Image (cartoon, rainbow, N blue to C red; front, side):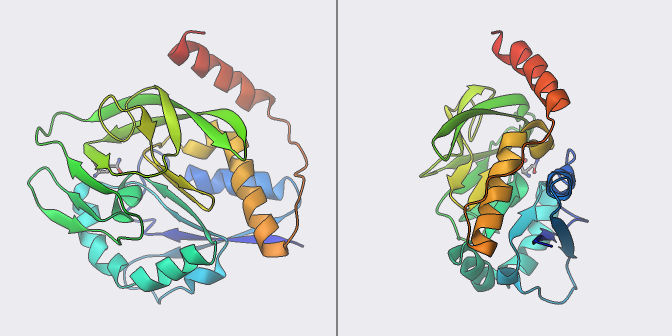
Length: 247
Ligand code: GLN
C-alpha cells in the first residue's frame, strides 16, 4: 500500500483556528483513495525527527508568546530543515510558522524573534496591538498552470515583507500586509501562508495538489488522482465565494 508520512511540528503550541484540520483533510483524501497516511508529531523535548524522511512537514499558527518560546528549539534544526526542503520535502506552514521560516519576526514590543532564515522574507508586527489583519480571505492561485480560488481566514498583526514569489493574488482580504495584493510565499514544494480555515478543508484542489506532488515524488510517477465526490465542498465554496466576491 502506498503511503505518505506527515510530520506535525509543535502541535501543542502551534494550532490556531483549526490548523490541525489540514492534516485531517490530507488523511481523509489519501485514505479515500486507498493510500496510507502516517502522522508523527514533534514537540519540545522529543527526539530529533529525521526530517528528510517525511513527505510533508506541517506547522500551524501561534501567538507571539509561543513563537518566541519555540523559536529557540526550532533553530537547532535549521540545517536539517533546510536539507529537507532542498531534497523536495513538502512544507505547509501556516501563519506563525510562515513567519518563523523567514529571517525574523519583530513583535509589537519590538522584540526580535529570530527565524530559520530558510526563506528570505521577514515580518514586523504593526506597532498598534489593536490593528490586525482579521477576516475571510480569497486568493487567486496558480497550481501547475491552473488558476484556482483559495479561500481561508486570516488573523495576524505581522506584516510580511520581501516575498519573492507569493502564494496568490488577493481578491478579498489583506494578505502579507494590510491591503496587499499578494499573499503568502510559494514554491513548488512550499506553501507558507496566513490562511487558517483550516485551509485545506475549504480547498480540495489545493489538497490534491499537495497529495499528487508527494506521491509523484515518493514513487517517481505522474499519478492521476481518482476524483472524489466534492459536492458538499463545492457547494460550500460557491456559497463563500458568492458572499466574499459578490459574483
Ligand atoms: N503571532 C503572529 C501574528 O500575530 C501569528 C498569528 C497567527 O499565527 N495567527 O502576526
